Length: 106
Image: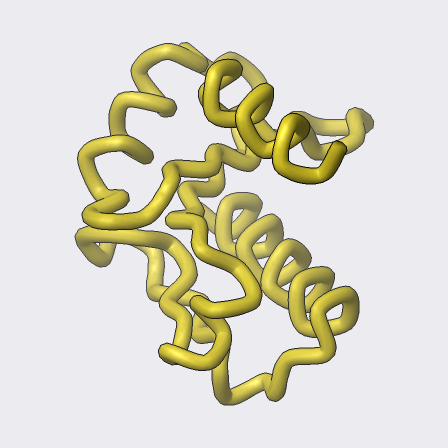
């Protein structure tokens, strides 16, 4: 659980720094709490309209973890952040959604 909490805090801080959010606008939920791992204020949701699920495990069933992200996502696009020891974190999202976002940018 400590590794998962560390990943949540890392991702939270990266979002705050990258999107210039106020720290009070992004809350890292306690381990074992139901729902999203990061809670966003309405102003932060405008900058980051995703529902975040973090998993820091050596062996992970990506499909099951993504299903949990989808279940907890509500009206927002699910985003799964995964990590294991000595590896960089990865982000998993729906490929069709990703392609649609690329079309919008280009």
